[in-house]
Length: 338
Ligand code: KG4
Ligand code: ZN
Image (cartoon, rainbow, N blue to C red):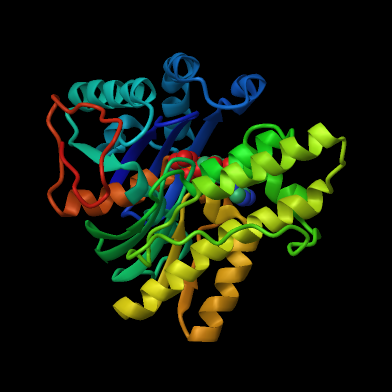
């Protein structure tokens, strides 16, 4: 089954053709990063407008790269939640129009389910059940993936997402958006014990996260140093801060795997590209005898191939939508509606 997938939930306009949920025939991403960089983050109105300008050409390119025509496609998939509402609407409207005019089924896909499915593209034999750490710019969850379309949230952030926290630290250090990636690059070789950060725990919720205290801590540290004219070593500061964030992510994930009896751990979302998180989870998994999976770097950030992968399993589960499908800004991964 060949699926044409469309993704426009944030600042990447993307389209891909994916066969049977596992084989990527094409994967086109038109990034808007250089348009948002001057503002230090994504401006929703600009994102929507740029999606509208790019989407036709991106979809056309995806078909061309896959060497298929629209009539060779069996279904149209689209990210419909969660994300920036105006940005999602562009993809959803385009996908609905295409599905209607071509007479193809329409498959709505939850963005975070797509991030997890990026691993199916990287590991053709990977199958649920497994435990997943989903860490992106807007979400930080520990999710039990019981089946391809059956999810249960075990842990969640009580405040900021891990990516948001890394982005804010990077921005305060004067790094360009996207901060998490630039902070990762800057911190390579830094002393991760140079600065001490708190290890916030959520009382009575051992799998939950809290990142807002860490974020405030690093911002105060930088501002205080500026006021006193003290020059901080940004490489060491970045390494110490990344260590603090990734320690929390690793500890809770390994504990959840042990307590819930999962043998396989799967990393997903933009932050799963982080070199320190990968290394720490590699070590933690090896020590405890778990199998660890994380996506190829090209599938970590937002892309439509991962949406095409998840769409295949949503289709097999009978999850297709009518033309009254709407975009939704907020929706839990374990309670999807369309
Ligand atoms: O999944 P994603 O591409 O978009 C959302 O769905 O939010 O995640 C974006 C997040 C941003 O916070 C970005 O800074 C972070 O992923 N990110 C990284 C790295 N690459 C991207 N964070 C840490 N290290 C990286 N190498
Ligand atoms: Zn994402």
